[in-house]
Image (cartoon, rainbow, N blue to C red; front, top):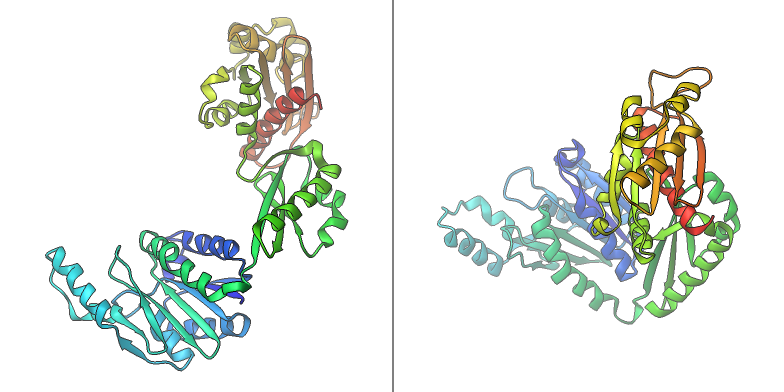
Amino acid sequence: MRAEILSVGTELLLGDIVDTNAVALSRAMVELGIPLTHRVTVGDNRERLLDALRAAASRADLILTTGGLGPTPDDLTKEGIAEAFGDRLVEDPAAADELRAFFARRGVPFAANNLKQALVFESGFALPNPHGTAPGAVLEKDGLTAICLPGPPREMLPMLENHVVPYLRRRLGQTTQALHSKFLRLVGIGESSASERVAELQESENPTVAPILRGMEPSFRITARAEDRETALAMVEEMEARIRERVGEFVYGVDTDTLESVLVREMAARDLTLATAESCTGGLVGHRITNVPGSSAVFHGGVVSYANAAKQSLLGVKPETLESRGAVSEETAGEMAEGARQHLGASVGVAVTGVAGPGGGTPEKPVGLVYMAVTDGDGIRIERHKFGGAREDIKARSAQAALNLVRKRLLNL
């Protein structure tokens, strides 16, 4: 069985609504071990809907649609499927009765056009929708299965979990295969460099290894297919070990980990605390740390010392350092980190200072030049970076590198 997802609705094409339904359907297919070949979005247009349905049927034998099941003329999904695949729509008595009862419970007049929602395929059946007025519908004809689901997530998600997934499990029977995926999250290395290091592993067909770039972080997704979950998991773990042999120093976490959540967890386990001193990042490092639940056990606080006077008065940066070396320098970064650590009583201090742009750069200190330092009282480690991009890009990359510097200090990398 191969699947395709077809999201129906002009509002999706216009960007008025984010298509979270397609994400949920994709994940369900992964859990069921059903290969998903395409995800397509089409507006509320009969001809384009028919084209999309016929194209989907040429590539897959399971079509999952979401949206277009309402009572208005532009709700065309079931009509389109019936026309595209030569079936007929008939009224489902139970669905019609539930529609009438739904409106009666709310004391709202029942408009006759609502009965359009009770239509189901002659070669199929309805899916109950206790959360709305549009039942789902399943078509089974000539080796093709089409499953129509409502658009509102509060209706679609329960229908998917309570009816569609059990139905597909029954259909798959003994042919069900387990599909297991794991993400390895990397930091401190570019996507191309990471991919080059594991190039031969990406040729594997099962498990597969796919490089993925999410924001500024490269990741590797490992996916294995097997007869049971335990075998698939073992295959993924074996491939993970091979990848770690090549890029292990850059792997900071897995799956839903974030760099900041890993740092908080690691520092808490070691009974360490953190203080930040930020200039060009404007508090972004502290913001990311405090996004982690439980970070109060680790994070003592931060100082956003944008002006030189603040660097002196709040962090104890020496006037002669600022005069001779400047605010953007190794020396200033080091004194900021130590000042934050001491003034806030933390085990570890980290600091960032640089030129975020778009103005303010010089030939000696161009836009994108950033210094960062970390100290634990037994020494200071300083890094120099030259980042590209717009102001927000430089700030984001600087915060990421500062968090990674703390990670490397903890791990002695």
